[in-house]
Every structure is written in C-alpha cells, then in structure tokens.
Amino acid sequence: MAKKATLPEFEMLGKYKIKPLPYGIAKTEEDALEIAKKIGYPVALKIVSPEITHKTDVGGVKVRIKDEKRLKHAYEDIMEGAKKHKITGVLVQKMARRGVELIIGGKKDPQFGHLVILGMGGVYVEIFRDVTARICPINKQDVKDMINELESHPLITGIRGMKPIKLGALYSLMVKTSKMIVNEDMEELDLNPVIFDEKGYDIVDVRYAK
Image (cartoon, rainbow, N blue to C red; front, side, top):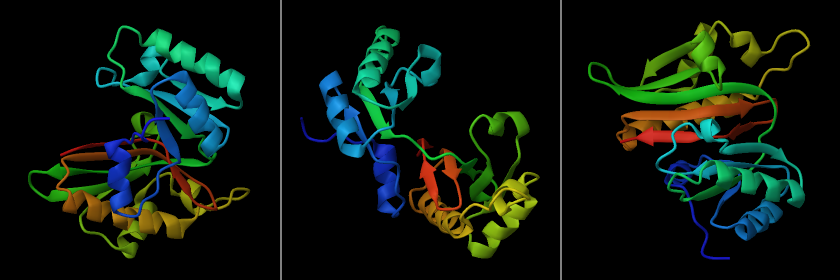
C-alpha cells in the first residue's frame, strides 16, 4: 500500500497527546481491506471529500462493518453515492465504543477571546442544546463546574443503574483541548461526538477552522 495518508484534523490532536480512534485513508477498495485488517473489525467507513459537508446525505457513512464481505459492499455503496463529487479517499476507522455522547469544542469570541465548550453531543446537541462554556485556559475545577451546569450531568456523573463515565479522562481531555484552542488560535473547534464510558473515550469526528 502507498505511504499512509493522514487527516490534518487528527494530526492536530496528536500534537497535544490526544488520541483519535485508529484509522487510515483508503484510495482503493484494496486499501480499505488492508487498513481494516490492520486496525481490526468492526470498523466504520466515511467518505472524505472537500465538496461534501454532510456525509450521511450522500450515503457516505457506513458503521458496524464486521467483516471483509460487508466492507466491500459498504465501500461500493459509498463510492456510488458520491460519484458526482470530488473524492479524496475513504476514512476507515475503528468502530467507537458505546456510551455517553459529548461534544467538546470551542470558538473565538470577539469580546471574550477563546472559549471552550462542553455539552451533550451527537444528534443531541441540536435537539437539547445543553451546553456550557468557559474562557480559556481552564483547569480541572473549571471542568467539574461545567459538568454540574449541564442539565444532563447525571448521564456523566452516574445515576441509579448507570455507571459514571471516566471523569479523569474528561478532565484531562478538556484541559488539553483548551490549550489546543489557544495555542493554535482556532476560530472554531468541534470534537463531536466524543463517546465516553467508565473506561475512557473515543473521538469519532474532528472539525476545526483557523
């Protein structure tokens, strides 16, 4: 296979010792099979294209792919759905854990400067808009306060029959993200969703603008 291709968004995380899910960029179906075999099933496939903002609109996301046969079908479906667009490649990514979906992000406010944001992620961020923010930089206590401000905080800290997520991992990720936003002078950042459980987290998608 050719030299490993990377995504700048994921490379940016690496600079701050934030690990994304194992992934690779496939240029061909053979690439996709090789990457999936290396990182291990199940995997997800996502179209990579500068012309496609909402990947699901063109059938550009396939998840929970468990074997080579399903991967081949998924790859063909993605390429067929996106054939009218410029395609950079297909992201082959380790399937994320199941857990609590959070959004961790930030923006540059003209009055307050860089802000870091925490809230419910995935589709819930648009439905419930349960988010809170702080001026960067932040520390562990700031993160604790942010969690308590969320109406959905019992999903994070634990309720009867449901274990809390790994809070130490959330504190660490939030502080690192705050530093990244400031150091890279970002206009916007979205880590969404970041899926947490009692053992850790998986960052599924990253977007930023400078």
